[in-house]
View 1 (cartoon, rainbow, N blue to C red):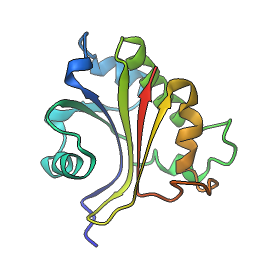
View 2 (view 1 turned 180 degrees about the vertical axis):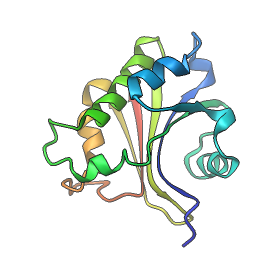
View 3 (view 1 turned 90 degrees about the horizontal axis):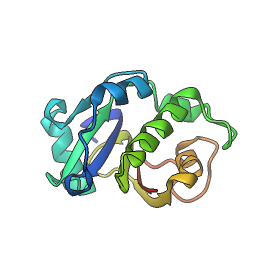
View 4 (view 1 turned 60 degrees about the horizontal axis):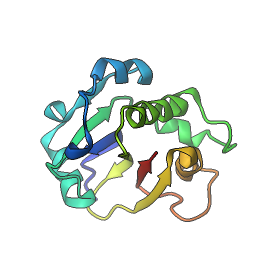
Length: 155
């Protein structure tokens, strides 16, 4: 099994849903780490997202840089009490939704490879925390231990 990339998190938004310019510096400030847009994301990563998750050129993609972020899910024991980093990701999604974007795709990728397991879910922003908890090692329901979690989050 050849891993193409790992420990990555992205937000993808359909271009037609974006009405105002998204400011990377604002997202970086909320995230408290660097955020890059599609022009700076590696081609092999974009190819994987397109082939396996249908994130085509119709989407604008943002990568939230922090190779340690997914480790916060390993320590997340109480679904109501996420880490500060997980709360920052929630705030980034909220910021985008408050801009008038009606839906964002949140991609949490532990390991991207040919036969990876993918869990996809739709949720309202008010339910994002319980849907993020699927990535916790303390969660044992549908989607537990998936290599990739894709949340389609709406207002």
